[in-house]
Amino acid sequence: MRETNEVHLGEMELACSKGEFEASSADHLRWCAQCRSLAAEYRWLGEQLTDALASVSEVVPVARPKWRAVKRRIVVGRQRRRAGWRVSAIASVALAICMLLSISSVVGATVAAQLTSPEAVVTPAAAVTAVASENPAASRATSTPIVLHEGVETPSAPLLVPIPTPSTSPDAEL
Amino acid sequence: MQADTETIERAIRGDEAAQRVLYEAHYAAAFRLAYLLLQDTCDAEEVVQDAFVYVFRNLQRYDAERASFRGWLRVVLVSRCRNKRRRRQLATVSLETLAAAGQPTPDSKQGCDPADALELQGSRRAIWEALQKVSAGAREALILRYYEGLPYAEISALLGCSPDAARARVAHGKVQLRRLLIEAAGDVVKDAGIVQAAEVG
Image (cartoon, rainbow over all chains, first blue to last red; front, top):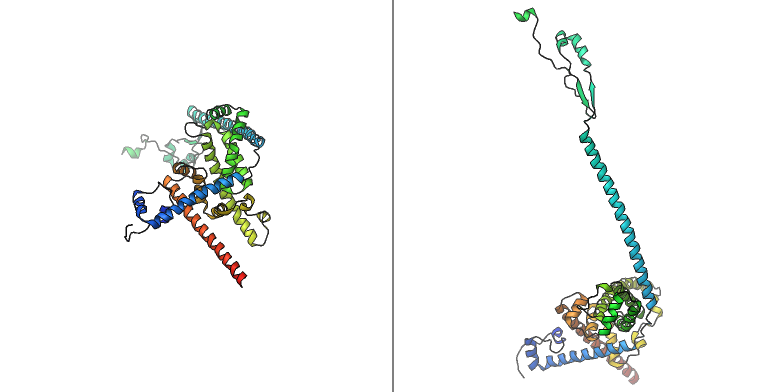
């Protein structure tokens, strides 16, 4: 027997079955009687455990097999699955129809907007008369109609666009 | 094996008689394994039925080249047993709370010692009783190793861990089991000593 201060193998290592030890552990077991004894104890425990479990399984009262119950559950499950498929198929078709309808309405509106020009409202420049009464020169100006598109606010910009005309004033000739 | 393959093929095609043959051939073994894993006949029965229902519903997915029918059933069964145990642990907490409040729990009326019911004797009884106290993960690994005789690779696949982890679980279970047996033996010696002292006194 070798006399060294080498540390003994851990219990987890010794609890392994025979033939599962690493090379270094197997070498240690060859000369260490203490570890060998503990390893043998674990081996014995494994055998006893196998026996105990086999005995329990032999004497355990096995419940009667209930094929009908299993069959019923299989059939019910199959029916539920079929019903589920049907419901999901109907839901998918309905969803597809809704999507088609909404897409076609959006596309239709866009195409219609492109084909027809937007409605225009022509408002006369009502302020022209008022301005002309104050300023005679303004009477020569041509009023420009303001074209208002629906939804667009009336601009607060000047309503008169003076058009240059040849001067007939005698003062101007001078 | 050949007969089993033919029966499975017939069962896949929807032959009810073949399905029944498979069920009856594998039921007892499945029940025993479920009982060992759960230590309760009602739970074992429920879990076995669940496993068979799953297997028959998904029989078309079975690949004979990958595993035997029993192996496939075992995978489903162990998974169901683990789920059942987890759910039971949750239920146990509430029952413990109930018991702490002084209310009788449903289990308290029944005989609690399975070893009594199983009429086990000697070291087998001691080992079975000690096994109940081993941690759940290690107990499952011990049962799969020492009852089913599975290699670590298969245990690891069933428990969802690496083969090294499966080996460690088995070793850890054995270490726990040994300590529990030593403690139990110590208690027996102590009790014997008390009895002797009382007799002498």
